[in-house]
Length: 155
Length: 121
Image (cartoon, rainbow over all chains, first blue to last red; front, side, top):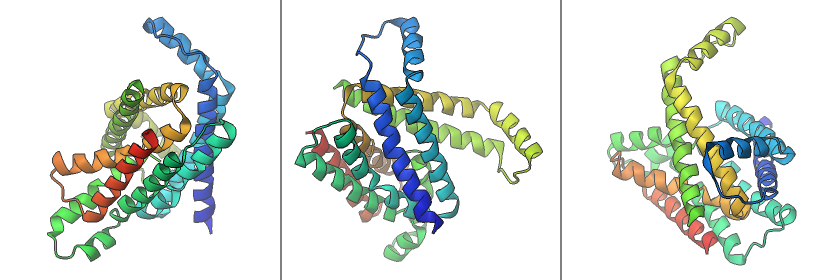
C-alpha cells in the first residue's frame, strides 16, 4: 500500500513543482544577459521569488519520495509508474498556466509515456533474460547494468 | 533554436551530474549505517570528494538551464521534451559503449523520439 501512496506523492509533487517554477520564471521580464554581475543579480532575484521557492520545495519532496520508492522497488517498476506524470503536467499547464495544448502535442505526450514504458521494460534483468535467452549473456548484463544509472534524477 | 540549445544544456549537464555524483559516492563508500556519528563522518568524506563538487556544479548548471528554458518555453513542451534523454542514452550506449540494445528498447527510444518531434511541431 505504501508504494502507490509514495509514487502518487512523487508524481503530484513533480508536476506541481514544475508548474510553480514555470509560473515564477514567466513573471520575470526577459532581459539580455550582460556579464557576471548580471548573472548574480538575476540568480538572487529568481531564488527570492515565492513561486520558485515553493517549486524547489516541491521538487525536493518529489526527489525524496522517488528515491525512497527506489530503495525498495525496482526502477523497471518506478519509471513506468511515474511516466503518466507527463500527462498530469500537461493538464496542470493547461489549467494553471493557460497553455494551449494542440491535439498533436497531446498525441506526442502520450507517445512519450508509451516510449518510457517500453524503455523501462528493458531495465528488468529477468525480462531481458527471458526475452533474449538466445543472445550472449554478457551483452544483456552490460545493458541492464548500465541502464538505470543516468536516469536516477531524470524523472 | 535557443530552446533546443538550452534543452541540450539541461540534458547533458544533468547526465554529467549523475555520472559525477555516482563516481564520487562510489569513492566515498557504502552508507552502511544510519548512526549519527557515522553519518557525520560520511558527510565529511562527501564534502572532501572532488567528483561530488563536479556533480553539484553540473546539477546547478542543469537547473539554471531548466529555469531559463521555463522562462521562454511552454511547460507542456519542456517537461516531455526532457524525455529525449532516453533516446540519447540508448544511442550513446550503442555507439560509445558498444552495448547490445534490445528491440524493445529501440522501439521505446523511437516512440520517445517521435513523441518529442510531435510536441515540437
